Length: 522
Image 1 (cartoon, rainbow, N blue to C red):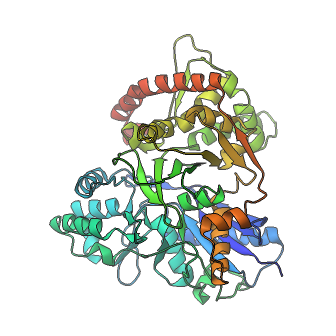
Image 2: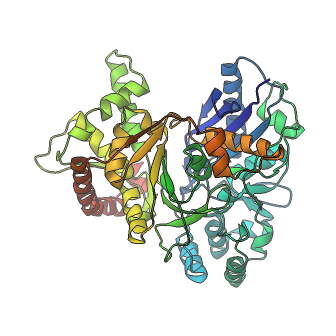
Image 3: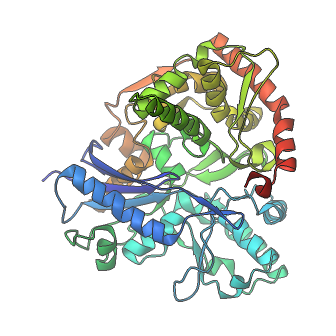
């Protein structure tokens, strides 16, 4: 039987399962929709939703496959990076999962960034941990371990408390020389934690770090039962190191070599640029993380991506249904975005900020559509405003990399947004003023990427000696179809003018945050 590898990724709005063959070809997929919730001022998902969503996505894959497999050659799990899952010694969750979307960790992130001489973003696990200590939260005295969402699911499936190095780099800085947490910086962080009253040693709370291809355990009886309620799936399947969505995005776009980059657009949007060396200086707009095989990466991460655009598409779909028309999501997006790049100078602007956005200095979100006097509100103008807003904060962050002379040869984009007739691809090329490539797997995303890492885990166990970049080039992407779009000068100028006005209009966003409270919205 042909080798089969299962990848599961817990994204912001979908849990997706993807089954691939020997060369990375997709055999079947399954998915389950879910949404984060704002509870007590913090974005979260319940662990019950995690468990139910895993089973639902796997059941959907089985239904689409037409059989209930007993085994796979390897499995991999990925999820949203960063955030905070804290457990006691009995493995019980101490506080609700705090996702990457939360921006309540400002004091901790600022203190650690200053002490470590490295940017510690608000969403990193160490920032969440230190903030809990600073806030003297009652659960701190009981913490026995912390992990990410991918690490938690991997623990459920295998019993192993490990992380792939890419995901681990969103918990605490990694030392490129060792491929492990930076021991010197960890010592400094421990001093700050102890000074704030922490009763633990941070090094003892963090998961073990593993590179791509390493042995990260096997599916247990309990893990098999969690995934497959039918009982057909058997234990003993090798499992790859769990990774974050940034790492799987790099793999899915074959952007793991120095001077390559990818942009992933979903609920959040981020760019990953694989570095040739260290950055000249730390920047609050740039995270330094790693590829799944441990190479340093400059990450420009924005909390707000295409969710607001998707919400407007949903309104249009409701309108179509209300007048008796039938339109698929793809048809709605095509109609909304079809004329977007031709609607130049219409004076319509959108702020897609559903949550806080550190790059533009907002602690909360207030999605807005604004327009200038005399502007022309049309479907194309609205589509242009919403599409450009998806890339606005990202562009601001990418300018910092340009200022540090970071070189890149290619940018590969992925995510469902790039399915719509090349419009988003052209807009991103204009935003970055650089060629943007989209492969035929652009909409498969991270579930496909972690399935490839499962395949690499299997290959290494079988004696594969090629590095991850070389293996991807030879085993997966040798004949991959890619479409590349060069930036158009007029579209670059149009986007630049939009961004200038968008930045000037951020005062409106700040005013809305200051005047419109949670109670007012209710």
